[in-house]
Image 1 (spheres, one colour):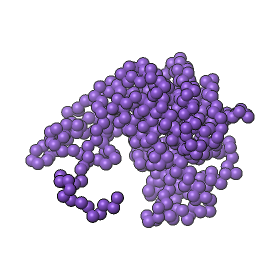
Image 2 (spheres, helix red, strand yellow):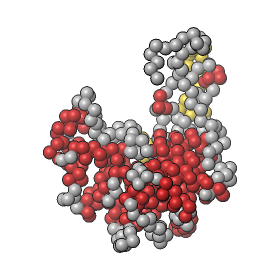
Image 3 (cartoon, one colour):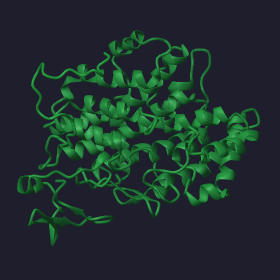
Length: 440
């Protein structure tokens, strides 16, 4: 169970308040910061803590992902992301995240078959797409169809049944790529392409997106590897906004499809999964390498609304380890497809060179991040910016389902219920006060 290793280390933090002292247990992590247990603080001291954004609060105990932002470390179940990106494929990483260790050869073959048998969608689900406007954002379709899966797969909604939980996670991961590909095809007005289960997960996704009735899509090994690497690097990232959303939704006992749909919704935000789309849109605004100096000046001006997207990270104060990996992949992809006819890709490379040398970037530790490079790669493969967050969501189904499973198996898990610092009116009598400022 998730909390077996969570034990007091006989160390306590002391809080002095109103002439009283309260002892708060300290728990050690296997790696990283220790935590102070404040779960009984309110019952003992009648006071809450205040932490907007929960940036200093551990919301759960987890064994899945470890991040050290200062050192630029990201590990899945103890394995460095650099090693996994080189040696694993996406489905092996999915298995690692959910089950806790790398599978052997026979286990991996079996697991890939278990995933691939769920790639098809029910024909009535396919009809759902006809209800969307032709210009609907692919993420809008992703949110709606993912949530709708719960009405079709009612044999995997019992969160207390381990078998049903496993079946639900396999369906979510397998069908996410099919839903994402259909959202893309619908957005460009092309017929849906059925999955081919003899292909790898990444190859199959490229096939469903770029094949059409007129011609077969020839899958490039270089682009397929790039796609697989992007999926691995985005598979999980500790307790970020969307993962926390999945856990919060799951804490109420909601079915897994609803929880993942909630995660997709959270990911859609431009400050989260939409950042790679925002980075490409920023490049389009700059327009040309000739305008880089002008826009750097705008970025340095605190009064100018322009912001550099794709640089720096909330967690990493060093080079994002995922960005290091994608930088190498990016060069291979651009050499493969060529950038002579794409001024935006050329602009991105020129901006990257300046960012790694410019004093402003270096002092503020604004290294190119994973969103910067993934956006360039996905554009080079042929995806429009609107699809970037969809691909992010497909990858993150691995982490979301692993985190949801871990939460479901945690015996101390409770329904999420953050508290607040209330700053509104005190008790008022109806009719005695009417605001002159009310202009509604």
